[in-house]
Length: 363
Image 1 (cartoon, rainbow, N blue to C red):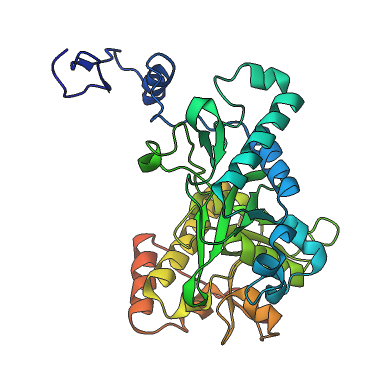
Image 2: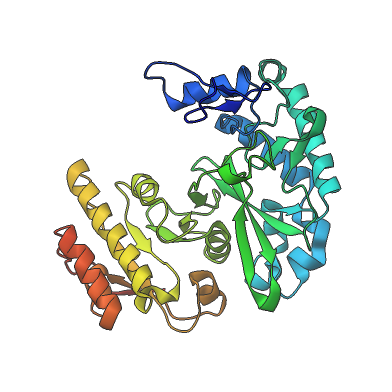
């Protein structure tokens, strides 16, 4: 057809190709574009968890954090500076700065999946790693990993694990200028599919940090920001379990589901008493968790951790800063100005009335 509006692809004769499928779901249309039209700008479908876990586990094995010891482990902002011990380092990987090294890793991981899971690989169109966030299709169908260009420095690979310890996705931490770390998902966003064909988005899963041989199930879940922070906290307090979200406004539903029927203590960064938007998100999570508890009939306590000085709870335990666990009402009474207004507004919206929690505890 010569009409461009609604077309999915430009034809070789300068016309336009349209797909006429009555009430077809978007996934069906995407599959049509990918398989019939060979449209590489359609993302690959996310593969099952066990495939992602196998690929990422192989990545950590082939490229451990020790590969770049000074940059990722022993340096000023390395893992040891955050209080991790040498035996904790194996939980993380290294992301090489050079594209040629990452592509070599992609090839080896693809071959490993093909050898270990032949039935799965046989049913795939293209490389076995397609559909795993971070991997995409290069020229002649070759598997690639990460950006097509070199980075300035290597990155730390931070796995995001589920409750059973399977790796769902990975984040990368780059040490940026002026001492600031930059975090990004190992993933392909929709606006980069022209540069990373057949890539896949990771989404924003939550992370479970647990030391299986040490944790005490009667202790509440600690909810914090970022998998690295959660892992650092549990490295200091192995009896505790932590759940991490990639940001204070992200994955509230997943956090609530993961802690349903469990006591929880929220330990967002120290600006949860001064940053109005952070306070708003914390108040929203508290109210949503309370509403879920009423609907599910599984009432449990929600408390907040307070401390002075350190930015994150991992920094606080490393510096041996005094921690106070207080109820949500006690937390709200420490707020002033805009933060207090934001919290009150959210709780009015949810018809939530905070009650005094358990007696104050220290840690």
